[in-house]
Length: 385
Image (cartoon, rainbow, N blue to C red; front, side):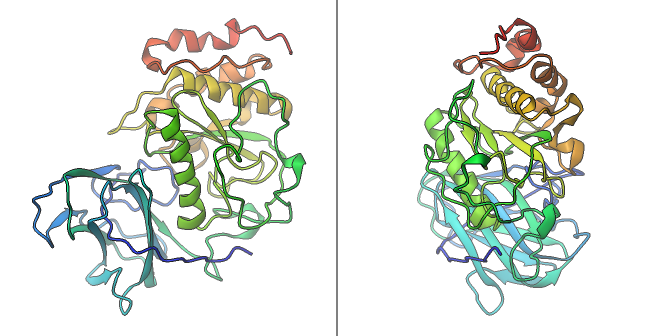
């Protein structure tokens, strides 16, 4: 059974949230504010101590009771404090009498997550504020996502049988049959290469029968080195923020075509609520939905095709079992701009068996290479080697 490993990291943290019918996040339970994610604010070093530099206003009420709120984004400085209000109840994360200590973690590159455990379950609207507690330099505060969470009995966000955000089972992470073989037709950055930590517990085994593609709805790395850091952040956010057993996706792809190994393909992931068993999750780093509107890169989509074609062929997955997250979950993921290429990606993945992936090239805007991508499945030499 997964444990609630709440190691408190002292922090003074930021921010706010937003959204509409489907929030622009990678999660299934977004806190819906009046603005769209991500929410950002320019913070000045001349701000008065105690000044509120961000205020989301109250969110929509929740359709079911929640007992925690999870936030992730970018905070280049730690001189901000995040405050949470529930209706007319003020909850301040450093006041243990009114608010259970928040778990907060900030990474050297400014990425952070923070979790607020509410004193009691509620459906009431929530409001977030960021307060200046000593900002030293001007910077931009960004909130990529705020999610409402409900802990199952025992305090862990999970349930058995694949019917929740994450599951555990009896398959040891040392079992080699759950991993892809060493010889592959594409370059895969293995877990050990990006310094993944092991799962908290054994996995739940499955047989891949479906592919779902996503975006991370967060930072789009500016370099391959930054992509390594982002993948490490995502694993920590999933494991310690969301309290999952491991990183949720099976594969992550950066803008330069680098393919990272997430969960082993032979085990259940955590990427589509209630639809995880037998479902392989492939996520592209970045946010491909308005108002951010990152442009998909040919290199990243080429790598998504390479992984998808290999998985489809290896596990005899039919063409009809290829989805964007929004097709099977209440989410805007993988973003309008990436989702627009769904049929192009499907054609390239399923029209021919994969032989060898085209090596990643320097990132190019997809808008300038659409015809090349559309003809990818027809023009690649699939020689079966």
